[in-house]
Length: 188
Ligand SMILES: Cc1cc2nc3c(=O)[nH]c(=O)nc-3n(C[C@H](O)[C@H](O)[C@H](O)COP(=O)(O)O)c2cc1C
Image (tube, rainbow, N blue to C red; front, side, top):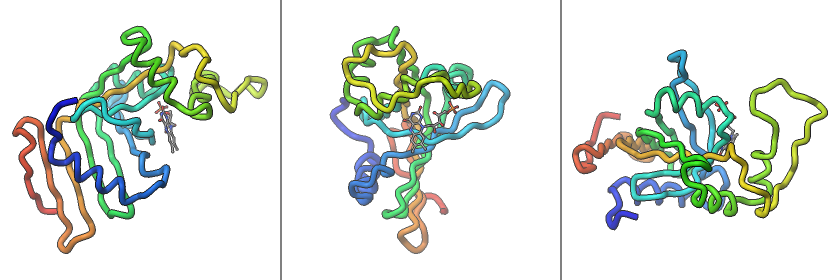
């Protein structure tokens, strides 16, 4: 982990803490561009920080977002903190870490999940027609072999925008890595 955090990290952490123990505090939206050039967005769980500017998500290597990211690694996250009345938008490039690339990191991530959290990786291929006879386990133990389609999505954050609705006027601040994370106040 880099010794110094970018200035937006403590602000983001404080906003997240305002949500208390709510599970939704870790939900964010991942926007990608699909191979047909069209936007796609969906909710994921933030799994933590691999470094000061690197955020981890976990997903299924068989899902559509993986194709999107192979086609266009640039992505954006939108993270809403309703209690703090703040929105963070994180832009960057996404690295796909597969079980082939880094089996140890994937294994550690797999073991760190809850049994119910792991279960979805035991389900049939996402987006295929539903087979009513297929099995959808409710839980998978940590001793279950790491599925080959488990993937860590690691976003290298290159730019951040924070919108704070808790002040008058609203505050909009931008930081980009290129300027050493210099804070830019903007019109909201
Ligand atoms: C609250 C919530 C949390 C979710 N967390 C994840 C997650 O951490 N990883 C994931 O791959 N999908 C997660 N999903 C499912 C995705 O939103 C999405 O439906 C799925 O990944 C398929 O997306 P795709 O077809 O765009 O690839 C979550 C959905 C919800 C509603």
